[in-house]
Each structure stands twice: as structure tokens, then as C-alpha cells.
Amino acid sequence: MALYNLLTDIGGVSVGHVTDLTLGSGVTAIVFDEPATASGTVLGGAPGGRETALLDPSMVVQQVDAFVLSGGSAFGLDAAGGVQAGLREIGRGFPVGPVKVPIVPQAILMDLLNGGDKDWGLHSPYRDMGYAAFKAASKEPFPLGTLGAGTGATTATMKGGLGSASMETRNGTRIAAIVAVNAMGSATVGTGPHFWAAPFERDKEFGGRGLPQTFTPSDTALRAKGIDITATTIGAVVTDAKLTKAQVHRLSIMAHDGLARAILPAHLPSDGDTMFAAATGRRELTDLAEFMELCHLATVVTARAIARGVFEATALPYDGAQKSWRDLFA
Image (cartoon, rainbow, N blue to C red; front, side, top):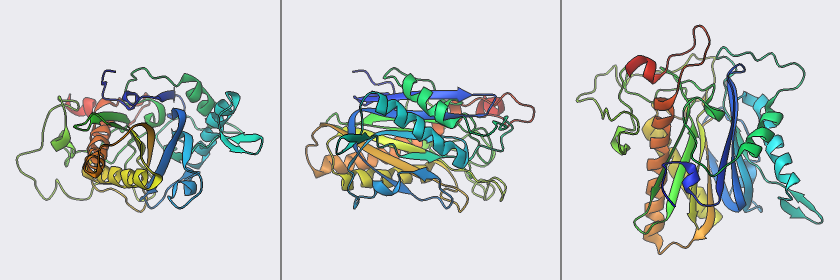
């Protein structure tokens, strides 16, 4: 199985997107062929999520059927219901007597102020968008940037978007990240084209600019969206390794390390930064050393996915919409 530098490089994982440029928002569904051992960590100060409490390693439920990443702030939490409906249709879910309940944790980002038409009437469109994202889920390569959960994403300095990246350990165990970058802070150094994640870049995947030769106080000064605007970077890391829930929880923590290496500042009071993690259990690890390498790679793929999401983004089609990296530097 070839590596495409995407989440779908992990066997048994499908990804589907719904993109609505009129709404200025979207949904991404990450669907597992079989229940995957899962956990997650929330480090932002203003998170929004569904079924996130059960991801704590001390909770009974060990596995999930899907993850959902969505725009729409709290309205977007309806999207998980749509994915849940799709899973119920095919008989998936946690067995409770004769009933099966699909387990679908979700994280949302705030994109209600980006210029799109949010006058949707009585009910938000996100449940239907979630169902459509589930139906669109595929193991095929997918584009990055302004699509799915990254459609309406912005950052302090330029358009955000959806990014992904993958890697293998020396023994061939795979890990990949998918991230919707809607950061309160910035993914680039100062006002220039250089990404904070530059040391981790592979094959010029986000421009090959490297880091600037020197850093000024302005480069490392606080750059953030307005105080009244909430943001949030959300995503997931997934591996084909066989791991315990506690080990998967550790991967979610390491993914946040990647977030903090790719965005400055990260985890602000108005961010809701949330990273899920999952293991499909298709491959046995050789030893503790390989698990430590996997933790390291969780950091690296998350940082790379964030930079790729911003690099590949295009501006929304509205007057006054935030410019993209390509608008500014290509």
C-alpha cells in the first residue's frame, strides 16, 4: 500500500468531506472499518465537543466507530448525529443489549464570523452535512486546504484549512494526522512565508522555505485574532498499531506537542484545541522503543499536517475574505 502522505494511508480508515462555500463551513468524517481503540486530549480554553468525556482512559468504552471534525461552533455538534445515523444504517455501534449505539466523538471549531451565509433557519444544516460526509467517506487520496472541516478556518494572519500527513516507524508501523487549522495564533513566523513547522517538512510539502536566518522580536511577538473571536484547531492522529487506551491517550498528548510546534501561540483561552487519537490494532509493536518512536512521530505528523493545511488553503469567495498563504507568497 503506497503512502500518499494522508490519513487514508492507515489501513481500515476512510475519510469523507462536505464543503459548503456559501455557508463558509464544512464537515469531515473519519470512519473506521472496525471499532478503533480511541482517546483524546483537550488543551484549549474554549472547547466544543461531543462524547469527549468517554475518551478518558478511565472510562468504560474503549473503542469508537468514527470521529467528526466540523465547523459551525456549537451548532456544528449536530454533525455527529448525521454520522451516527449513517453508522446505524449499516448496523454499527456499541452493543447495549439488543441495541447498537454508534460511538462518534466530535470536535468543532468556530467559523461563524468568516463572511459566509449563516442564516440557515430553524435547524442548522450540520446533521445533514455529517450524514453526507459519512456517505462520502473513502479510502482514496483527498485534497487539502479549504474543504471539509477546514472550509471556514482562519488564523491570526492568513486563511487556515484542512491538512494531513503520514509517516512510518523504522519497523513499518504507520501513523497519520488530520487537522483543521483555525488557530487563534499563527502558523507562520511573523508576517513572512516561513512556517513554524519548517524543521519537520518533507519533500517541500509546504513550500520548502525553511526558517528565517534570524528571528526579530516582532517575529515572536503575540499575533492573535481579536479578543472576542474564538478559534480552535482540531484534529486526530491514527495508527495501525495495536495499543491500549492509555497508550492511545499518550499519542493524543504528543499530537498537542506537534500543535504547539506549528502554531504560535497555541492553547490560548479562546482556542478549543482538541486532538483525538485512535489505533486500528492491525499491527503489533515490537517493543517499548517502537512505541516511543510512534509518540515522536505523532508530534511530527501533526506539525506537518497543520502547515500543509495552511499552505494548501485558498481564500473564501467573499469580499474582504482573509487572504491565503498562496495569495500572499506564492
